[in-house]
Image (cartoon, rainbow, N blue to C red; front, side):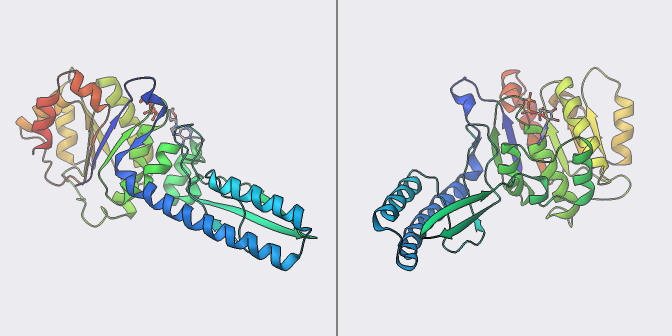
Length: 302
Ligand SMILES: Nc1ncnc2c1ncn2[C@@H]1O[C@H](COP(=O)(O)OP(=O)(O)OP(=O)(O)O)[C@@H](O)[C@H]1O
């Protein structure tokens, strides 16, 4: 079952980084493809020199410049002016990453090779496997583009990888798991196996350390899950058991809550977590700090 752990970095130094443990293979793949593109780039520079017969000095300077850029990690240009796939990560700077396509065009003009970059947002919602109702819901909230952590993790979560995500506050960690989980349940791998109908057992469990945080995350599941016909409940201490119990009895797709109250519901026989498809430990570091470790272990051990 996919497990997702979300936490904030602990020191300012670390806080500049978004760490995606499960993403390592992606980065590795990227560096190989970058290498290939650098070689391809060098070849294409040679071809250009042969076919367009520019002034040798001028052309050499430009080719050297291109090589310098390529070796510094920024690959520019293409061999024939077609669109090319580009992958870069810029999570540390907080800039949108280039997971999507960048169009580049080369213009041949009397031997001078010019590059023209056609602007395109690689993190635009339309570049991801997000269904229309969810796209519309995002649009109605003014979200047209994913934040870097969301773009980085979307496919991994949707396809069911375990993941540890870490980012500074306000970087959009919540939607980084909410969106792909909802898509997986309605249009992805979890669709075929999730429970439906009256009295259904939940497919998703999200644990958070406090009532306030649980309420915030639940609100996102309500907004975006509601647009896909999924329902959720929020279980936290200090509020009456009966309404929570009634909701669970009717059946929910997503349970969001604090460890103590969720453990109580388990002990009362109100929740069956055997059909879980996703479990998320949000603000995991805080949960451990607050002494929820035993409750969390008990809940996840079910
Ligand atoms: N792609 C996006 N485009 C625009 N706004 C977004 C996007 N993703 C999230 N937001 C908004 O950014 C704000 C911060 O998001 P969120 O609370 O998920 O961040 P966080 O990293 O979980 O922060 P915290 O650690 O404080 O919980 C929210 O108001 C959210 O609605």
